[in-house]
Length: 239
Image (cartoon, rainbow, N blue to C red; front, side, top):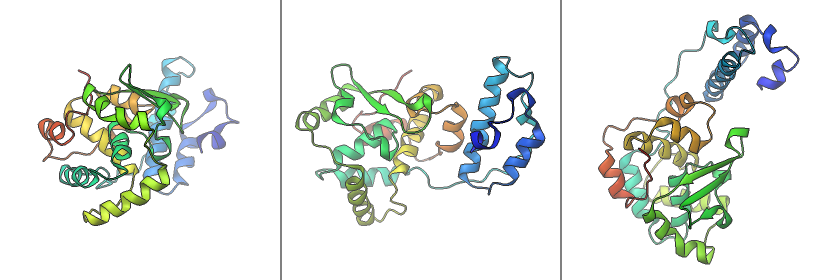
């Protein structure tokens, strides 16, 4: 959207009025919020690199921030899900989503799971920055994954989504959306105290602000100890 609207305008000739006019034509929703964050981050970088003298985005009047609720699964829902997926044929697939923060279409294949170095590679589907990410995993999660990797026992995104919907229905959990597992990954790491910059890198975000403002929800009932207990110390925490 940004490229299509501004590719013919030299960066140093871009004005606040042009940017404001662009955003005024876009309906207020989560996509618009993402666009404002990306665009501002882009122009901030251009300022840092002395490509422009000042960021024209700073004077843009932004929409009042909306609160998008229930994006991540709260700690009670997570506990229900973890118990419900045990023994199912998509257990390992759901854990992959929860422990890597990948988008549904980015789910790693067996070739992307490096058990020797405790790393899972996520091949991004969005920005240049997200093309290939290295997600570190704990020894506990590696040991869990090993038999599934050896037998190549993973499923397609579509199959996983269908089974996940059934499990959420059984658990009486609304909004059975795989993408919510990505939000859950970010929110859990926030509670675990993982540096936001590291989480942003794992998720392939251009800015830490995206990770914190859009993907991180606060669950006052969740604690570090509870998360590690539910996930059997699967979550990797970099201090």
